[in-house]
Length: 515
Ligand SMILES: Cc1ncc(COP(=O)(O)O)c(C=O)c1O
View 1: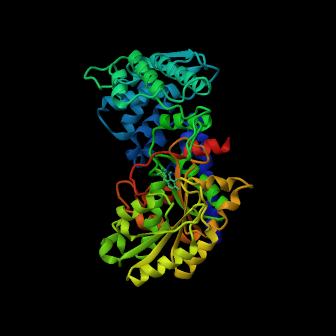
View 2: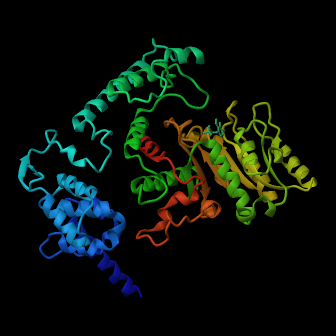
View 3: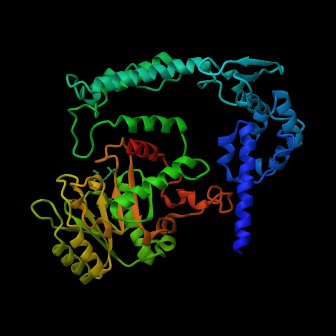
């Protein structure tokens, strides 16, 4: 068995090597080497693409675009690409859109010599110098994209000048908000602001031109609260981390969804690496987790998985399958804990509020009393949420003492460090969260103390709870989370989530942390 495994690995490696060589010669290295589904094709003996096209045909039905790009990039001209595609797909007539994509893909055709090879519609070859002077012919995208969108509408040049002006605007904004002599906010009451913006607030029937759109951007920034201003203070977040901001811009440019590996390969890996880093700061060697839209939702996740862990049948049968439950948090905890109880159908009055001391820390003795009280009323205690950095006072609950109570009573121990989680990165202050490693789940918002741009929140679970998020939330929708994909489908992390589509909040966090 070991021999067979070794032989299979060697053969895989060889195939990978061959496909990489071919991909390199076709100028497609990055694209193909990232796609494990394409590893086992064999390039044609003449190094051209036709044989490969035949081999790829079946499996590429679902990835028509990539297939066409591959064919067109390896072909000498639009006509050749079209002929190859026609032959391989046995289509009499290619839809106009397909030909357009094939033709436009030629701009990335393999090059030789110093210039880039451009083949125009008539099959005539021209040479253009590489570098900033090289301009793709954007008109070739016509038919494939809406003509009313940039860059199709105004060509590449129009797009560059629009984006350049937006960047200028942003730079000017950054400059202005860092100048102490400027106001943090030019405040107006809603009716006044509506008046001030009356020339641009409504959405008109007729489209506005780009000049007006730029002016709209300017007006918007003018009245925004300058949260990056040195004199802007908020108890939870302040400042503007420019690296994270850059991450946010690029995130928008990639405009993707986080549900599956195939649509967000790099970002899914970044999420894996970053969540692991955060778990290590908590003191866990491994575990599970997911980014969530804010600390309230991370806390909701915690209560959900805690309930599912204790009563897995709740997923199918809802509250009919569950006794009357009780959860516990301090009087100074964030209101999202109560909200979770309401959302999860347990009701706000299932939440017991534990007394705090004069500095706002939960009193573990009172917690124990309330657990007894709930039991005496026939309720089933299951969940305690301690806070590591309360919203108003910044108090850190005594986690070790609370963990002891939870252990004695067999309760889920959640730690809400939405705000305070950042102290884990400080040698001087991490003692405030001593005991956090004993938690069953942790909420941590990098958009608060870590200064990452809004929004960015994480729910983390230790190794013993790996799989709970998937079990609790997984729906295995077969149009999205197919189990027979050609890669390790455990990287399709979206099924752990409450959402379907999920925003990419990881890139800015990863980028900012690396910086
Ligand atoms: C301790 C604590 N938990 C949870 C939250 C909720 O986080 P979010 O605003 O990201 O939903 C906050 C927000 O202030 C908080 O301070």
